[in-house]
Length: 169
Image 1 (tube, rainbow, N blue to C red):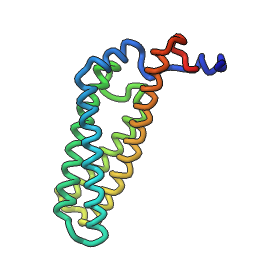
Image 2: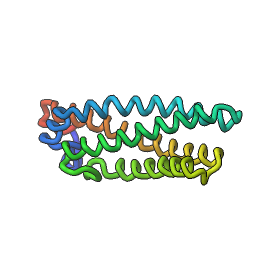
Image 3: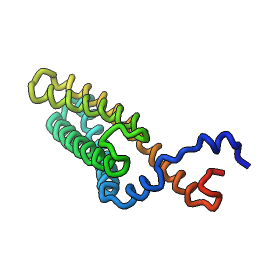
């Protein structure tokens, strides 16, 4: 038997209406496609950036990969804000995803710093790659946040669908 105090503190990530909106909107599918695509581009780009840093070769390939990763990041941020509006009624910083959004803005800031340094030529190639590594570390943290949130949503769904009345055992 579970502790009654823990049952009182259990609050699912989504209300039933939010869960229905999440399941019905095309933006959930869009996020489900973009997130793994962005991760794949990130993984390839990370290898190219590290290759450049270790050997001095492949600057152009690393740069193109960073630009692609940045474009995907901006796209997933815009479509994610639309998803948040559909599901939670606000474009960003819905309580359920507040900290994920905060870290996302840090990730965007670092990617934007890279773009600024590249376009204005105010950062050297080495500095650009170091900014990229910082951006990628922040992105990895943010991806972990979202994976944990996805896991929680799945556990909440299983608990809500369980015959025990929606309370975890």
